[in-house]
Every structure is written in structure tokens, then in C-alpha cells.
Amino acid sequence: MNSTDALSARRVARPAPLRQAVHEALRDLIVNGALRPGQHLVEGELAAQLGVSRQPVREALQRLQSEGWVDLRPTRGAFVHTPSPEEAVQLLGTRAVLETHSARLAAGHADTGHVERLWQLQQEGLDALGAGARPRRLVTANAALHAFITEISGNAVLAELIAQVDRRVRWYYTPIARPRGEDAWKEHHAVIEAIAAGDADRAESLMRQHTERTTEFYRRQIAGAP
Amino acid sequence: MNSTDALSARRVARPAPLRQAVHEALRDLIVNGALRPGQHLVEGELAAQLGVSRQPVREALQRLQSEGWVDLRPTRGAFVHTPSPEEAVQLLGTRAVLETHSARLAAGHADTGHVERLWQLQQEGLDALGAGARPRRLVTANAALHAFITEISGNAVLAELIAQVDRRVRWYYTPIARPRGEDAWKEHHAVIEAIAAGDADRAESLMRQHTERTTEFYRRQIAGAP
DNA sequence: ATACCGTATTTCGTATGCAATAGACCAAGC
DNA sequence: GCTTGGTCTATTGCATACGAAATACGGTAT
Image 1 (tube, rainbow over the protein chains, first blue to last red):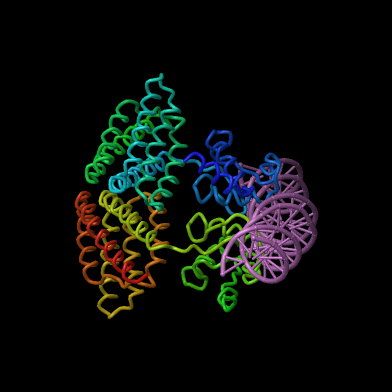
Image 2 (image 1 turned 45 degrees about the vertical axis):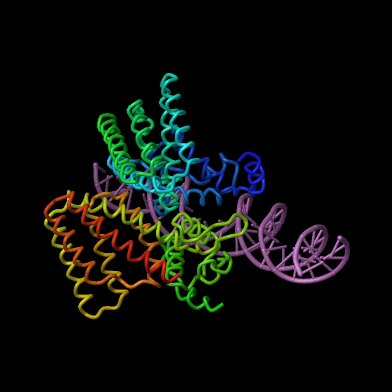
């Protein structure tokens, strides 16, 4: 994929719309906590701080709303969304269902290249785990593995939905939660084996167990932390 | 272009959020087929025909993109999304999974008022069926029942996701498909009973059967008619 | 305190201008 | 024929400026 990647990357080097840059910038600011939940986002200020005009800011806010990052109150403006524990639990449950389904599909579509990459991601997770837990990194490795399973499933609709839900839920629990650690990666191992074997039923069932444990884990963190 | 008439007919006078009115107007025009898949939506034309300026149109298009109605190509503009049969199948499958989950949750939350309303919706569907109904009406009744089950589930995240997926999938298959008829309503009956009894496992299982049959039904229609 | 009133702030929509670019059209060259 | 190259046009993307309407704020009178 090397040379091809570089080439296609260059060919696809379209002028990235400014509104998209603004969208990502604002999303990152929200995720990082620079913009706090409930905070009023004033178009003019954001525009000035980002060095752009108000128009791309407004379009970015529009998109941020449909992704659940901000609430747009008519005639009042944009406010950083304040996630409730309830909502977090709902997001977790929904994501679990979607990922369970993606595991089933993945088992039906995985080729040897996919499986190889899966083991590689699994190994990276274990390495991160071994190298003295940095929570952030583990969460990232976990997300990468799950995202790849979803990609294998070959269902773009499902992938997009999971991505949406995942962005939001991750934002919620990163500040309060620690990753589950070794148990989670053992469960991954089993899921990957099932996918590699093309055993859809088993892959689904194992993924269900895994995601339900994860959900339960974070549900407790949420109940104990806010 | 004869779409001028249809568009100007949608002119909206409400002072509240104009961009939202535009968003809904455009979405309806896409659903109704006045704006056809692949068609290039020129901001200036839309603005003129709706009697608004370009800005609310742009914001509406932004949102329509994130809902999958249009594709926004940088520096090229908006094009009505062309759904592939593949995508329709993916939407169907995803919706099935989400609704199966919502049935389980509904069984855990339903009170007597909910159940009463469920039977009422069921009856309306049967009436529509008996009255030599128009397919359209059956599809609507069906959608109403499913939406209410989702509402009972008490999971706003799930509800929003299902609504998103449902709008898109319904748009795709309405032109080609006929509703399933009596069988489907018998299956509804069973699901409602399980929800009324608070039997989550049974409700989930029955809903899974139901949605999988529906998915399979439409999958065949799509395979035979695209 | 409470009700009322005026002002400041901000959104929302309008109008306009302009640079950049993708695509269409057309012409010449292999 | 079919590529290649150049010009033209339509459209987007962004900036800027402006006005109207809604809301919040703060002060004053009751």
C-alpha cells in the first residue's frame, strides 16, 4: 500500500474546505475539554480566535449539532452539549449492540489479510498494556481494534453509525474511566479467533459478552463518579 | 426544469429557524422524488426557488449530508445521494438489529398506557389491511407501530438512530416494494404480547424474527427490481 | 422584593463581491 | 480515432457588511 498511498494521497489532496477544518478544530477543543459542557459558543468569538469569518463557523456548528457535540438553541446559539449519565449509558448500550452485529458480519467477510491485521492490532494493544498502563493509549488501541472489525464487516452504514456513537461515548467516559486492561484483551483474542475461523455465531456471541462487560464496567464507573 | 413548481410550492413563511424549514423542505423533495438521485443541487437555484438566501440553504445542505441525503463534494457542491441496493440492504440489516434491541428495552419499560396504545396501533394496522388498503398506508401504520415501540424503550439515543436509518431505508424501498401484509401483523401481535408481559427475552427474539423476515422480504424485492 | 423599561449582545438572515476550481468545450497533435 | 492542451464558464467557498428580531442584563420605580 505504500507508493499507492502516497500517490492517491496526493491526488486526493483537494483543497480541504475551511468549514471542515473548523469542525475538527472545535470538536477537538470539546473533546480536550478546552470548551466545557454547557459553555456558550459565540460565533463571532470563535471566528476571531480561529482567524476565519463567521460563515464556516456556522456551518461547522451545524454539523457538530447533528453529531451530538453541541446543542443549537434557536436564536440563542450553540452550547457545548452536556451529556447526562443516562445518555452515556444509552450510548454504551447502543454501541454494544451495533458492535455485536459487526462482529457477526466480520466473521463472514474476513480474509487472511484482515486476520493478520487483527492480530497485529491485538498485539499492539498487549504491548501498550505491558508497557506500564497509559490509560489513554489503551483506550486508543482498543478503539482501533474495534474500528477495524467494523471495517471488515463491509457494512458502511453500520460503520458510520458506530463511529458516530463511539466518538460521543468515548468523549464522555475518557475523563472518568480507566480501561479494563488484560481481561478485555483476552476477550478480544477469543473474538478474533472466531472471526478468523469464520464462525459468525461464535464471533457474535463472544463480542456480545465482551461489549456487555465493557458496558457494565463503564456503567459502574459512571454511577460512581459523577 | 419543471422542479421549479414543486420547489416554489414549498416556500416557507415561518419566522422561526429558516434553515430548518429549508432542511425539511429539501428532505421532502428528495423523498418525494422531485429531486432525483444524482441531481446536482445548485445553491443559487435552490435559494431563488425557495425565496431565501444562500446561507440557510448551505446550512440545510450541511445537515442533509450528515443524514445521508446528499453528498457534498468540495468545490463541486451538493448532489442528491444515490442509494445502491447494497446500501439499502445494509440499512435494513442495521435497522433490524436496532429494533430488536429496542423491543427488549420496551419489554422492560412498558406500562399499561403504553400497552394500550400498542394494541390501538396494531388495530389501526389491521383495519388498514382489511380495508383493501393502499400499500402506502400499511407502510405508514407499520412505521408508526415500530416508532412507538422504540419510544417506549426509553432510549433516546437508540430512537434517534433508528429514526435516521428508517427515514433513509423507507425512502429507498417505498417505490419498489409492497408491504408484507397479514403475516407481519401477526408477528406484531406476538411481539406486543411479549412486551405487555414484560418478557424481554421473548420480545427480543420475536422482534428479531420479525425484522429478519422483513429484511429478507425487501432484500428479495430489491434483488428483483433494481 | 417585584414589575417594568431601555439597552447591549447575539443570532439569523440578507446582500454582495471575489478568488479558486472543476468541468465543458474546442482545437491541435499523435 | 483518441489523447493532449488551452480557454471559458458556472459554481463553490469564504469574506464582509448590514439590519431585524430575540434574549439577557441592569437599573428604576412601585
